[in-house]
Image (cartoon, rainbow, N blue to C red):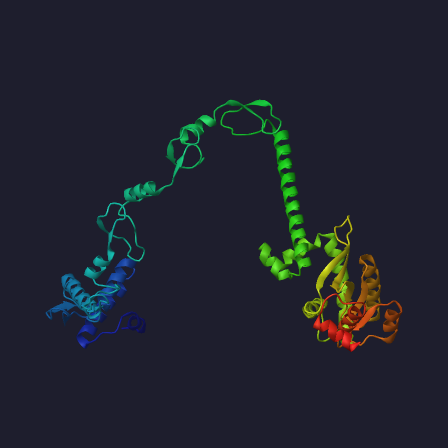
Length: 444
């Protein structure tokens, strides 16, 4: 045998077989040109086929002959299928879990409950007919057993409307809620009606429900509605602004006004911003606020009564027991144009004398000069003695006190002014026995 023949032929397992293989290989080699490719492949498979062996079946244990001992495990297809069925049943039995409802170990693979508990969970009662049925998905409960019951229940619960044309009751199925279907169809038929803007007659086309004879009247009516709407909104804003101004004059805060109107504080400020009076008052308020900071910084303003309202309230309580009549915010002259005029902080009457009082809570020169001028002018209008009063912790300058004395004005701190007024009433002739007046007379 040549070297080429040895390379071409496969190795053999025993000497006898090797000899036979060599003989066959030599014959095949000599007859190679006469064989086709398929015949050569078949001859090659026959020469390389492993020997047939006896292998026991994996299920029944009976031996069977096969030339694939590593792959073949079953003697027949029936044994293979039966082995897989038994293995699957054993696997399913090993995976049984405890049912959370009944507590038995019979919940199968990929199930939450056993079949009996799941059926009991799926049972439900129809809300329309009352019979029991099985729900498709217990996690999304149904109310009705069928579509017929669902439609019947919806029709029974649907609101009924009364036709304004014929008076019959009907269930709305789209379209108008004030007319039944027949009346709605009749309303859409061609008919002659009056224009809602100009009042002329026009024929309405088939299937059209319009109120105006043409686009010109329609646009004019729309513009008229918009004008009326803007006019009402403007009137409403003005009324709210007037209400806010009145509330501010009464002493209410922006927060209280917002609660009363049911609006935000920003909206209230926007309503006030459209008023010229509020803009002017805001300008004066900002100016006063700037000077107030300066007065607090330089200790010009009273620390006991930082606001004039608190100081006038204190004076009212003190003087109500000492004098016959104490009238706060007394009007001395009215202005017909605005309805407001000059007012005194206090108008006091005692023993036939009248005192016109102006109060300030700062020792700033411009404020004190303003207080002096207002007291002289307003008291002259009502025929009263002018009085200027400041808190007890304020020390006005000497020039202002000299000017007050030169113009016969009672001026000074609250306690000194009270004593001087009582003294003047006692000197000029008291009309009734008053222990406080007697104290003033004794002091004189």
